[in-house]
Structures are given as C-alpha cells and as structure tokens.
Image 1 (cartoon, helix red, strand yellow):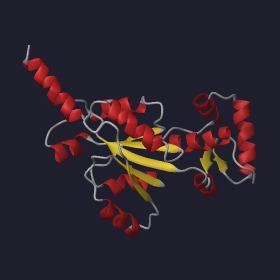
Image 2: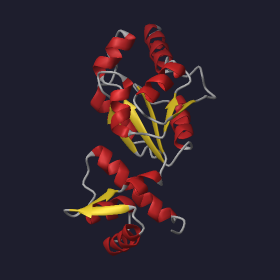
Image 3: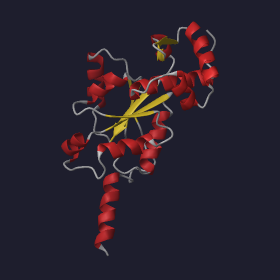
Image 4: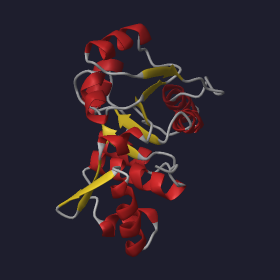
Length: 211
C-alpha cells in the first residue's frame, strides 16, 4: 500500500470525528466537510476500500481497524469557561501531538464537584466555544463519572494533560494498563502560566468594584 495522500488522511480523520459526533458519514456530508466534490469522495473511497482502510454499510462510510491505525488521536479536556490565549496555546500544542484532536468539555456537575461553584457558561455554551476553534477536530461533553468513561469512548493514542491539571500521571497509567489500553500520557507546558480563567474572573471583579 502506498503512503496516504494528505486528502486521504483527511478523509480518515473526518470519518473518525463524525462517528464520535454521531454525524452520518455519507458521501454528501463528507464532501461538504472536506470541500470536495461527491465524485471525488467516491473515487477516494474506491481506492481506500481496496487498501482495506474504509468500509461502507447502508450508504455510510466506516473506518476499518486498519484505517483507524493510520491516524493518531489526541485526547485532552478541561472546563473552558472563558477561552483565553492559554487555552489556544495549549490546545494547538496538543494538536501537534497527532492527527486528530478530541477535546472533552467538563459537565456542569463535574465543575461544581471539582471547583465548588458553577461555571459562568453552561456546558452547552462551553462546548460550542471549543468547537469553534479551528484546530479542534471534535469536541464532546465528558461523563459525570471518571475520565476513563470518556477515554473508552474515544479510544485515543495520546492523552495530553494541561500544565495545571491535577492528575497523577502514574495513577492514570496504571488504570489505562488495567483496562488494556496502550496510551501515551504527555504533560503539556505553557508560555502563559499566569493566564487562567479564575484569574480573569477575579480581575474582572476587581475592576467592577473600582467603579
């Protein structure tokens, strides 16, 4: 099998992302997603089917195990209450670790549990904010249980942890191994450690008190 072209890889990425988002992978939808003609999408499918990368069932394309192995999926998550330059830097850094960036947005109940207060924006609004970022291939809401409930849904190759996220990497590695997952855990750095949503909110309160 020849090395995948950039367009072929984008097709694999889009099929994976749409499946995660529960979007139908029809020729029409994929042509719109990738800004390609429907004839060209069918031509790509024919070639990639021969290579065992894609299958079709009831008019929808699906990745085969071989097709899935051709893309590296990066998983990261957070609250994303206020999107700021620190988020942009961190998420763009995460995207460079693979081909597909899946961002998991914390549920409102999870935010209350972990931070002791409600987020400024509800989970639906925060999800839409993250989905609007061009380097995010798919954004989904997390579970209200532990992180691995969502990990098992995404089945990533890499989990990128934010520089200030309070996860014990050794515990995560043990749990991944217990579940039979082969994952890389990478702690992301940031050039802007002082930019945090909580600090922006507090600064905003201080400004409002001065008026």
